[in-house]
Image (cartoon, rainbow, N blue to C red; front, side, top):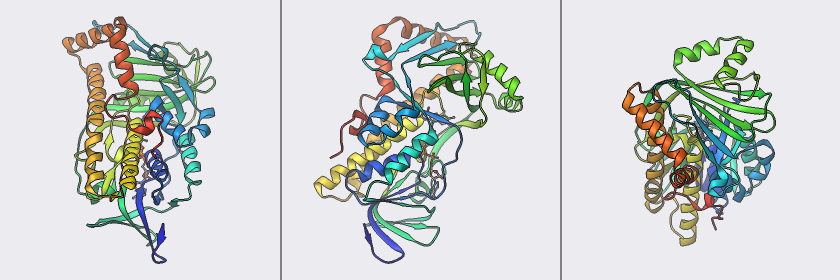
Length: 407
Ligand SMILES: Cc1cc2nc3c(=O)[nH]c(=O)nc-3n(C[C@H](O)[C@H](O)[C@H](O)COP(=O)(O)OP(=O)(O)OC[C@H]3O[C@@H](n4cnc5c(N)ncnc54)[C@H](O)[C@@H]3O)c2cc1C
């Protein structure tokens, strides 16, 4: 890193946004040896959400020396159940997926976002070629040979490449002139954690209702996290319930599989939408995490996609450094856009189809969904193929997610 004046810092890569995807990108890129600056002024909202990290994401965190600090705060997901709770004529049979069927100990681990972010921040603080600037970016100017990020306090960072991990209202995306496309759903995801009175046995259960999934995901000890997708009016009704009434409502929705429950303080509400950048790179900017793609919180895809983005850009930077080429040049940015396309498009489509099949009142749609789940339950090879693809995409798995070092 070369401080050129008191106000300007020169580096190879500047990462804008210190959410989980940006922190992951900064740590992964710094691990290639590139001089890296992370601009992370705005604190991440401290809600009680958790993230189900799939096994590849955990392998990447392990390879980067982050997972050791997460392990004690995370619960393994050894099995997944899908239960049709639509009450409709065409009800699908229950399907159960076991990680051991595809040779895994667990599909992934569930961890509170605040614990994950704290572990990433702690690792970032140990890397000598990674500078964290506790400032917001207020300007991003893209030139022919570099990109300049202006901070709110007047300091400037000049880099070969900017990684835009600044969330769904991305300044970097706007500076690169990249539009988005998307849509909203008539649904809200309520999030909260529960104290439970029966063991969860490391099993995640999705009750598929006609308003959306009600998903219970293990946390360490006798606790679980819940994502409850309902119509906005129902979300308002649930939000207004007293703690006792909410406990009863949640026990009813979970069919008492966890016994009587206690909803912990700190609930969140997130309207459901899809938003995808039309390109994942433009000029000397690449987009990572929610800046590139927002998907509904169904099937634990959002941040796992973000980690694959971060690992992909780090891998391309490692290649550029080895070959002595420009880390912000078209070889890196065009290839990044190409590599991330199929993965993001296929996950967005899968989540969208699953969600719409629940919302649809059309009998043929319910029939197709029911037959699909019946086949998954009955046909071992199909079930195993779906599990393998759900945990790790066959075509877009970057090195870090296979647990391989970058250099
Ligand atoms: C209810 C719910 C449940 C979910 N569950 C899962 C799950 O189980 N598994 C999964 O994989 N995903 C899950 N997701 C998705 C996941 O939470 C998101 O994909 C993830 O948080 C996105 O991380 P990010 O770092 O890209 O964005 P963010 O977390 O939005 O972080 C962006 C950061 O950039 C900062 N920023 C913005 N502008 C600037 C600026 N100008 N300068 C500096 N900083 C800036 C922001 O303050 C923020 O800190 C879930 C999402 C929801 C809503």
